[in-house]
Length: 111
Image (cartoon, rainbow, N blue to C red; front, side, top):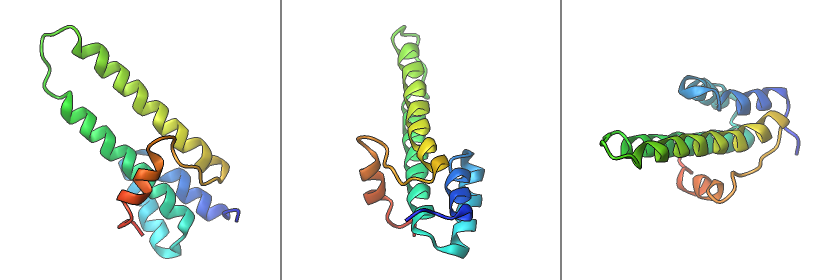
């Protein structure tokens, strides 16, 4: 089933920062779209993953190996975000490889 224009907007807005996610959550509460909830769960998972990553790297040490790992983690988070955003912009419900199914299962309370 192809989402209509409003559902697509919900999917796209969900990926535009935490404020966009909250706006998409409010927009979707009126429509209660499965498509919208799918993308809200995906982005919530990305935000939780980013928070966990940044919490782990918050303590900066003077060791040389921490900084490259931070950069790699940020790049990986951006790639994950991009892999989720592109299908939403196209109107598709495609899970993020490897972790998208877990996001859908863990965050079922978003409905």
